[in-house]
Image: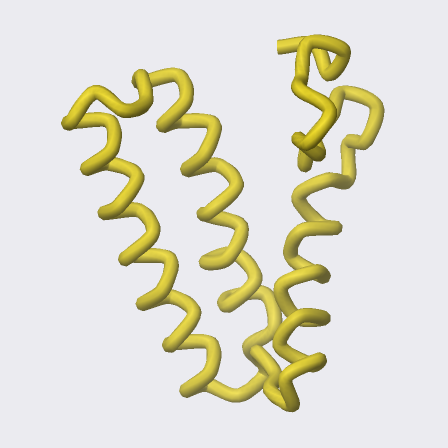
Length: 93
């Protein structure tokens, strides 16, 4: 999908022009945790994020099974959600 096709209230997370979108998302996960006084360098916080990603994955797969989203949408959404798992792993020693 071209970003020109998106509704005005949708912010594209990854675009062809920004090859570093995944890294930006990983950094955003940590920044959001820091805003709440937490850090993904803490093993328990990182594991909690992995659990949250697992839950979001189940919810998205359920949405696809129930016909709310198609397989292409599922895969696109999962690629965003999985940056949470990458972030949890990235900040560990």
